[in-house]
Amino acid sequence: MRRPVALRLQAALGTLALAAATGVVLAMPEAAAAAGGATGYATQNGGTTGGAGGQTVRATTGTAIHQALCGRADSATPITIEVEGTINHGNTSKVSGDSCSTAADKIELKQISNVTIVGVGSGAVFDQLGIHIRESSNIIIQNVTVRNVRKSGSPTSNGGDAIGMESDVRNVWVDHTTLEASGGESAGFDGLFDMKDNTQYVTLSYSVLRNSGRGGLIGSSESDRSNGYVTFHHNKYENIDSRTPLLRGGTSHIYNNHYASLNESGINSRAGAKAKVDSNYFEDSKDVLGTFYTDQAGYWQVAGNIFDNVTWSEPGDDTNPAGPDPRSNTTVSIPYSYALDDASCVPAVVAATAGANKGLKVSDGSCAPQNPDPTPTDPDPTDPTEPSPDPTDPTDPPSGTNLSLGAGADGSSKASGTSYGNVRDGDPATHWSPAGTTGSVSVKWPSPTTVSKVRVREAAGSEGAIRSYRLVDHGTGRVLATGTGVGVAGFPAVSLTKLTLEITGASGTPKVAEFETYAG
Image 1 (spheres, rainbow, N blue to C red):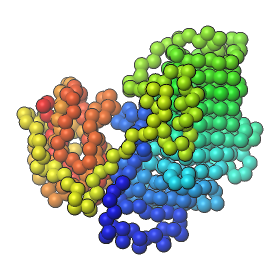
Image 2: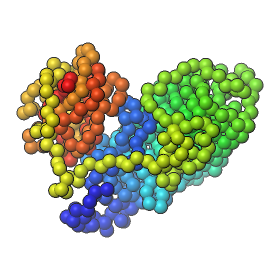
Image 3: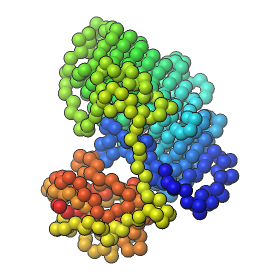
Image 4: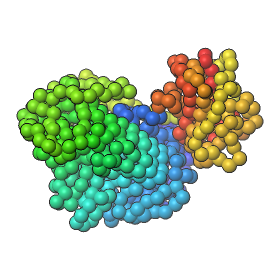
């Protein structure tokens, strides 16, 4: 947390009376983020950081959540929304603005990016109100409960899904949540965690899914195969009829989950899906893995799982259970590192860590709950005791040839009158700016080029505008370096064809004069 600054505190207090009327309290500007860091496939494709580097806002109503989204400079401005209390239909309304597209019957995260929603204080409960993510990217949802979301009956919300994602969604991390219903489809409920229509790079971790007919799906039909790269780990599925999850196409990694009382079927891999199923604990359940209710086969790689009192159906035209002696029928390569608990301790570890209001505890593979790593914050921009970066005069300037001079350039949408090429032309009098306060710009080469050091120079007069950034190997999605304030960054030498500077937080409009790259 930042040290208090008297002038900023005085200004903030002046907004409290107005904000309280709508259930929102604006916190002091800071580089807030979810505790710990994303895991699994959410770390790929450039990673998932949510609202890191942006302002933090406190909300106690659904309307306040929508107001926070709509009050940003643009739809990509990073923001962390801390939620406390019960969010329901009675305190949620549609809010309009250029940086949002909200609705009255759900929490709508549509056509936006760089957002964290995290439960704080005495807890956050979304009661009969679902969370909908559409055409959005870089979203974190952490430490919240979503319960009893209906698609029929009254009130209805989000098609009956607790959390639903659809239409070109990228990089979502849902962590330490409790998702629950009070029955199946006949009682008006649908899925707890659904992904469809080109949703990719998602992780569901340390969460509890219970008392529902359907746990969740990847792909809405046998032809909806554009989804995938989803990780499920350290979750508890309890008293679920089926879909834990249902996989249609794509690749999933399912490890260290505890499954109890799966009444009809469990992991249903079909329509060409591939799942790596590692060290899970299944108990008191039926048909926990296989291809079910279709003749379009799916595939799995299994290792280290425990099957405790699991029953299996006989194979049939539309039933292909993996058991009673599950064997792998494919191989799945996982691109990230992960700490794997032995399946024998999974029930205890998951019981101590999974769900909302568990202190965000995690496992490091030692079968013992751990506190999350602290989240770093950037220096206070108004505290004179904190050193401010001087990106035009780095203390460790790189040497050798600036490889960017012979490279190409591209990036995200740019501000009027600027050019991608200005970042690698050797002329610091020119610059590139994103269309908003955040964005990305890349240098690229026609053949693999070794890079181990970068120097970013901001245009004269705008030094210090960039508050946080990431350097990403575009080809692999690997994050090579992160920082607060730009200047010189080094990392182990890597051969790549495209290096991307992602600006994740800024004050005002950033102006990148030079994006220099060096071999050493």
